[in-house]
Length: 71
Image 1: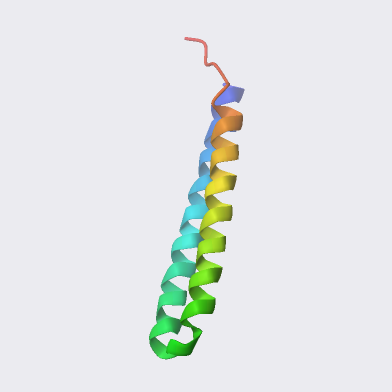
Image 2: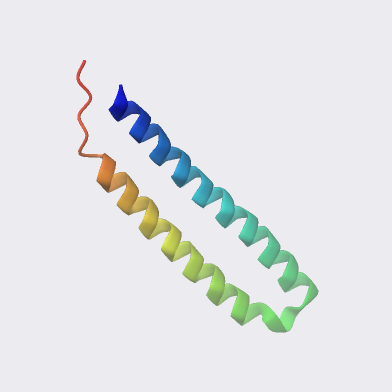
């Protein structure tokens, strides 16, 4: 039962990372519409955040993919 709780916590963390990334993408999109000269900077920051989020998600999934749940 403890293993299921660990996996559940991990999935919630991954979900929060993706939710935060979505919020940042929407806010950056609005800033690009309001201030077009910021386009290059905001696209660069968005791509860095996307890369870090995907790396963290992959590490978390890889860490918990080795857990075997007994039937």
